[in-house]
Length: 307
Image (tube, rainbow, N blue to C red; front, top):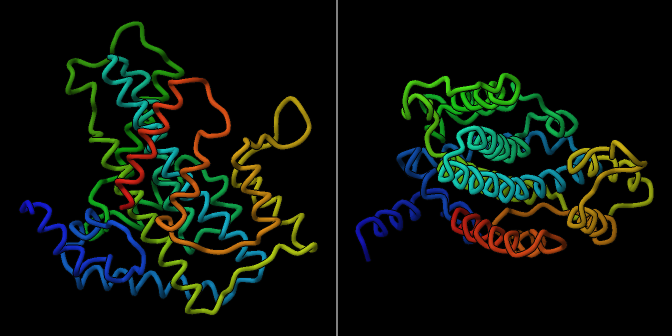
């Protein structure tokens, strides 16, 4: 076994993996915190926060959180797709497209974590502002002793500024002096996405564990909750179609809504639900072989981040 692999195994033995009863990989988070005790402290603090808010949940709020955890896992696939596309744009020499795709890769990675933040109300996190996401994420997970070492707020502000500059004041010539200036202060988008996926996986498992400790069980969506639950699902997953009546829901989300309505709601960790979500990703419709190839790459990268 290589030295690197040996060190990862040792970190797992005293890191977050020992707190989770399902196969998962938290190597980057373990390294960021630096010790088994720091990982245990983080786990204990956050699971306590989840248990506290769960004591005030009613049935509809519990159902809403089942949608939030699904959306968080969806964000792992979405952010990875954007990150791959951003890399392709960079290799093609298109900085304009790179900024746009990189910004949304990081945005969805961050959003995927914040769907699981215990202090965020469902209606608010379903429709956040572009300024709220980096601010809340930075204060909750970054900083000097944060579980992520990236300065997410600065990175997202930099990418957003460049994206907006090229979108609304498209320059006739490049405004940058050299390649280093053009890249800005933003490091690997892929690294940010991978660590956010591990972080959302960790928090999803903490939510499931907290629910079990608080004796929160799977729920059936009864007749009295079907309308409000459907509204919550649509608010998180879609928006009203601008040209016709009804909501703009793609096939996988429509299928998921029907699953919730007929099979009920429960809370699971991302690594438990990965296979089911992977089967849904880009499998209903697409644009040909390019989609098939990209989908396989996304599935592989999300798998490697989780496991």
